[in-house]
Amino acid sequence: MDWGIPRGVVTVTAFSDGSASVYFLTGGGLIGGGGQPQIADAARRAVEVAASAQAGMRMAAHYPLPGPGEVTFHLLTDDGVFETKVPESQLATERHELSPLGNAMQQIITQYRLWDEGRKAAL
Image (tube, rainbow, N blue to C red; front, top):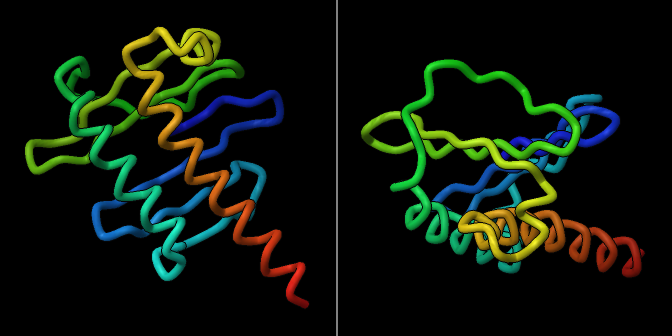
């Protein structure tokens, strides 16, 4: 998922092995995550949700970054890369067919944040 925010783009990845990462266009990110059960579970759940969303996507030919307020989903499959772009405002309504996928990808960010807060509290 590429999420267009006012200061750039946040890219969230999820893989079936439980690894997940969050990258910031401005630099830095949170990489791997598969060693943390909550992050790995969120990644696997996102992959499951993405599989059910593939039917409404098209094959990707180009990979432009989304603008602010836009979200682009990319699915890497054995048949190629599928994509679709959605206004963030439509995902937020919880009525859009891709809202569950957006929520699943957001859960990865949430689990990274919770893990980081717990790690800092333990110091």
